[in-house]
Image (cartoon, rainbow, N blue to C red; front, side, top):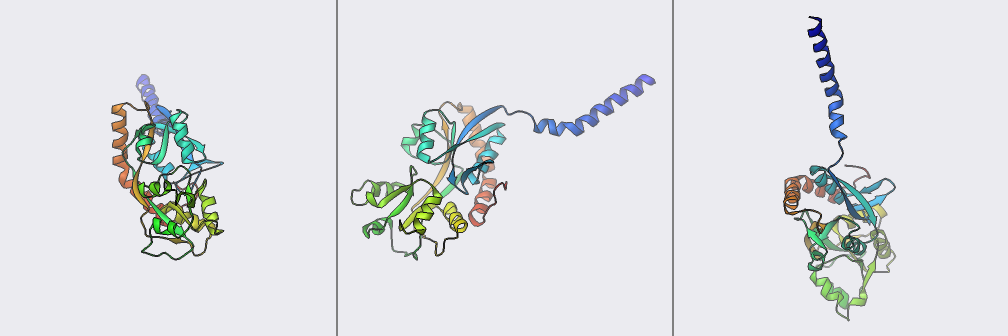
Length: 266
């Protein structure tokens, strides 16, 4: 009888311990692997880095996707998208976020399935005019500020290669600097992701900050993975996670588009 009581006590202790510590033990299990993700530091609220680390819409999406695969993301601060592509090509980072598909980039890495839409739009201090397009603006001598190394579609690429217009397209490294250059009238327009542009206008309190309906470039963005990071089966699983999480991703995109999301809100 004493033996039975002792046996029951041991089991009760074991079960109670599991109920108390079990969830914590599971939560604290180490990741199966780690990936180094390059993050452009000045694209809030899409990607940004401060003393507490990386944050923003696409950082949240990356955390969700890699968490499903039990892979720990380690975010590395990078200054521009051009530098990010360089670091991926050198193998210094494993993954880049919100990358538009371009054939030259496909030579550097492997594109995942798309995970959200990116909408590039014109922003200005002047009221929008529906009939104006990029070429018409450049013909009038207007200067347009752009992110260094970003892809804005074939229309803008062809205009940049045109000797009559290329000098009017001004490369500016950070989103804050681009908006400030516009506010100081050192450029007449900037082109930004719609979410980023709206956020920066609110954050910096720019008066008469207008978004144009003209679709500079609408395209889907991807994760760009270092070659050899995943085999075919792992890539298929990665893409399957993106597909399964798309409703959650769409909700995040909607929230970031219309609200100022505080730092650290996940």
